[in-house]
Length: 198
Image (cartoon, rainbow, N blue to C red; front, side, top):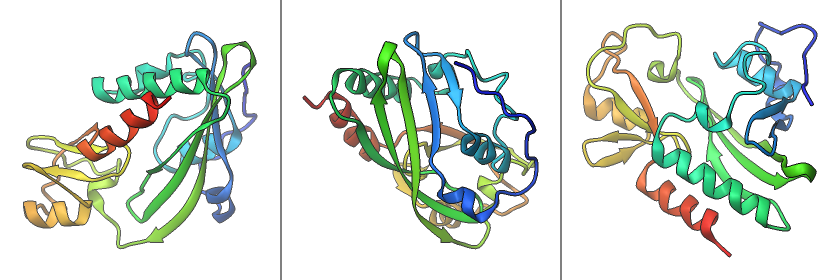
C-alpha cells in the first residue's frame, strides 16, 4: 500500500503536529511501504525527504549509515516480528531549537509488515545549536560522531550533550565540523539487550 500526499507542506510545522504520531511501515521484504502525513510534515520541517515518492519502495536499512545501527535495527525488527506485543523504547530526535524525547513502538502487522510509530513525550526549547542545523553549510575538519538514539556527541572517548561537546571542542558557528551518525556505547547496550530479549 502506498500513501501519496496530495500537496507537500513546505511551511513550518504547526505546534499540534509535534504531538501527532509519526508512522511509517515496511513490508515483508523490509521496504518502506507507507508513511503518514505527520511523518511527511516532520520530514518537511526538519530538512528530510520531500514527499514520499522517492522513499516508498526503498529498503529501510539503506537509510541507516553505520553497520552497528543497521544491526540493532535488524534485531529490533526480528524481535517485533516474533513478539506478541510491540517493542518500545525512548530516543531523541532533536532540532537546533528543541530537544525532543520520543517513544517508538515497533509492532508486527499481518503479511509480514512492521509498523514504526513515534510519539513526542517531551519538548524542551533551547538556544539554537547550529551544529544540528542541516542548512549550516560551513562544515570542515574531521567528522564528529553523533548518537542516532540519544544525540550525544563523541569527543575523544567521552559522549556529551551537543552543547557540552561544542564547548569542549571550542567550536564556533564559523568552524562547524561535519556530523556522522552512529550509536554510543550506552544506547548500543540498551538496544541490543532489547532486541535480543526473550
